[in-house]
Length: 108
Image (cartoon, rainbow, N blue to C red):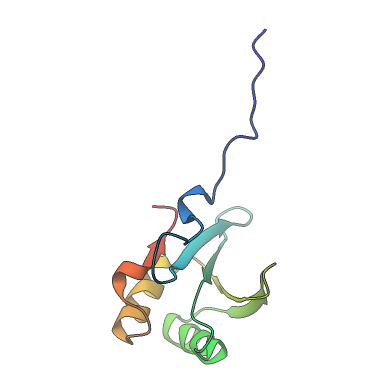
């Protein structure tokens, strides 16, 4: 019988370490909850930005709930209810918070 190894898949493999890029990337991911429910996470925003204010603007513009969480590295991550990946990218580019090439959408 063949030995199957199911632990070789890494969901964050395409994120990379950022060592070969001159600027940090903003990662926008969607995580499935239960049934049709999902959460959008925005990670990698610059430290000098007012993340709490950006989260408040997301909530108001997208008519969704949101929260700030800390990841294991101690950086802020924005969580939004629903699939808001394209809305987040458009907002960040329109408000000139990030350029379009520095935003990575995961899950498409």
